[in-house]
Image (cartoon, rainbow over the protein chains, first blue to last red):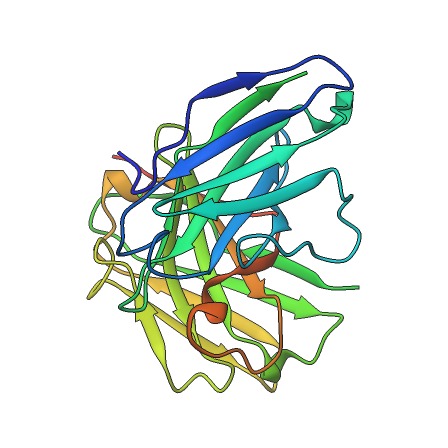
Amino acid sequence: QSALTQPPSASGSPGQSVIISCTGTSSDVGGYDYVSWYQQHPGKAPKLIIYEVFQRPSGVPDRFSGSKSGNTASLTVSGLQAEDEATYYCGSFGGSANLVFGGGTKLTV
Amino acid sequence: EVELVESGGGLVQPGGSLRLSCAASGFTFDTYAMSWVRQTPGKGLEWVSAISASGRSTYYAGAVKGRFTSSRDNSKNTLYLVMHGLRVEDTATYYCARVLGEHCTGGSCYVPAYWGQGTLVTVSS
């Protein structure tokens, strides 16, 4: 069982928006602003798309946005495109030299 | 362009040992902390270890502490993970990853930003 809780699946039609949640505790998500999100296509390595809750690395479309409230972080994908179909993982610094991940959410477009 | 290439994976019996390597290029290796993250079909992503840019500080997940050792040779731009006492549950694809920024501090050292393609470790008799 993963440390952070994500819904196993999510879906949306092209052009729509979808929100994926990531719930932790005050010891990880709620305690630090080091929540990150990763996109993984089948057979590929994860790709960082959001870091420090809402920051986007260079080259990541602004259709991807992140937020946090209490112990729950969220990833919003707006204007869904076919290439957004992938599995999304959240990660959070958990203190005590520790990084924890969610179980992943498979997004179907 | 950042490139990370893992090698050394394979089939090993329970209780055996293995050394993974990660060859880095495209950036100043000795200014970035690095991590190992593994992935199994059933358990998703699991952080394994982190090592500071200098190599002087290392950190491990509870599941591997005492069995795995992370190190780096900054003169060779290479990261290593030596694994002893391997268990069936260590079976996974192992990724090395670089953090986002140079000279990271605190939690920012735990944001794997650039990932290699992974190397598969299978522990089975």
